[in-house]
Length: 330
Image (tube, rainbow, N blue to C red; front, side, top):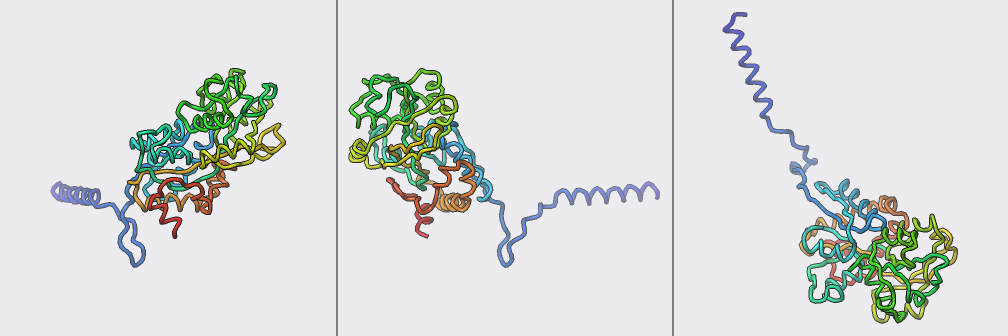
């Protein structure tokens, strides 16, 4: 081959290579009889949960996993936070897209009462009720604490400052005729409260979470724990003033060394979103979560098992998002 022919041959090869590189990427095949499918638009969902020692965080991780695998284009992540009150503010500020929150705190925020006095969040919408959140008053054997009234004069962890747990603690103490002036208040998260109980720095702690709770199990692994009973008359008085509470029993055997059933009260854990969330996205989040119930159980055996569509509206005290209404009214 002479030099002229060789030049023409190499030029042709170069042109073919350039054409191949510039060709458009192949599209996903269209469904039979349908239009060509477009790539799903990327949607980032930040799920604000709670502390890593509580129930919210593992459940949020389960939700993120479900939504990432079952809703095209969704990129969901679980964020550890200060829980209910902090989550309301994260949602309002656009720093979270889905929040886990107590139904009482959601009610306060939507209506501008309690810690949201004069600072209502009218765009807050309910997605679903998840499971009962048990108010567990934890102490140790030998502390001389058998009733809520016995907390007077004690060092008590009431939850993180401004948290939903702290509101529950204040209201339950009030029902027993106790104010913060009557106790030594410690504003501690679940994990901090557990460590301080083990170290003898506090006498009792309020924990609002689905039972069993990791923080309490952690204490029981090293010390004999007790749960303080909330008697029926006190529960009735509490419910009369704060109707979002319900009576509940922590069954014997839930925690090591506690063989008898323990009467107490509960609020409800729920998912909330902003009114601006896309209706179809909200619907799909609910549908895929309920359709993958086994993944929620894997995230937290007890609380996950209670997340069912038939109880998804129990205790819903705020306006429902249209996507949620579409799901529950299907």
